[in-house]
Amino acid sequence: MSQIILVTGATAGFGRAITERLVREGHKVIATGRRQERLEALRADLGDNVLPVTLDMQDKAALRGLPSSLPEAWRAVDVLINNAGLALGVGRAQDSNPDDWETMITTNVSGVVELTRAFLPQMVERNSGYIITLGSTAGTYPYMGGNVYGATKAFIRQFSRNLRTDVLGTKIRVTNIEPGLCGGSEFSNVRLRDDAKAAAVYEGTTPLQPADIAETVSWLVCLPWHMNVNSLEIMPVCQASGGLAVDKT
Ligand code: NDP
Ligand code: 8X3
Image 1: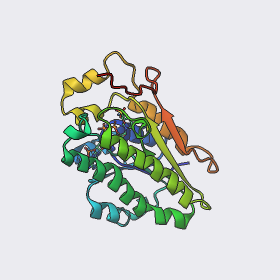
Image 2: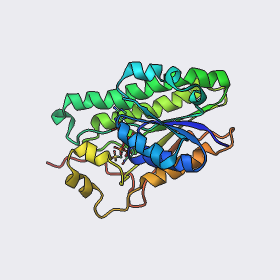
Image 3: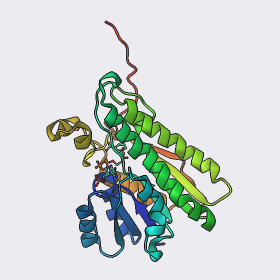
Image 4: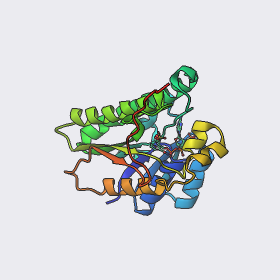
């Protein structure tokens, strides 16, 4: 059945792949991000089932006002996919830039919280809706340089669990997707601010791809209404958890 699905961060990587897949499967997608020309390109490629909406996840007023600013026919959002997010830097905490930390927190945490809060009342009123968040394995497993990025994803993981608890008694579903190493997006280019270094992250690996995340979302949104997948931790076969650190100096 066709649903109205809002995807944040639709201009690149996971969000673009999710948008392409869901529109091809017959859904209507509100595609958001800062780069308007990329949103317009999506509509040109995919047609009128894409509604491009320029949105900065750091703009609290825009996030709060989004539901009422949508065209009437697009307001009853069935699925909110909180995908937009970023990591900045791989330095140790003591060497990191506090402005980068602030950007990660406002985008990955405050932005997600604001947008979710903006759409939740209408879902509760309709007794139906689905909130999907993009967490990360970095929210569960620490690694050197993961400091604030991993902490934002740990917040999202717990926010997702707590949301599901708060909406118990309604038919609203909540899922946190927690991918590990994933190539084919701009994630490492943004994080490292260096395309050659970004490419080197994936050398010798077969990472997840945005299409794999889109496949996962496509599966989730078609599940019977009584099934709630709380979380999904997904890694490529070339990755596993482990690696406790020991200082032998
Ligand atoms: P990309 O860098 O390819 O895409 C990030 C998207 O987020 C872009 O569309 C970008 O749009 C949007 N975005 C970033 N900042 C803002 C902002 N302030 N306002 C609005 N939109 C913003 O990354 P991925 O597709 O790889 O990542 C998507 C999500 O998945 C992120 O939350 C990331 O943390 C998470 N993730 C990624 C993994 C990976 O290895 N790639 C693994 C696990 C989780 P624009 O710049 O146009 O605004
Ligand atoms: C992205 C995966 O391992 O680079 O969230 O943090 S990782």
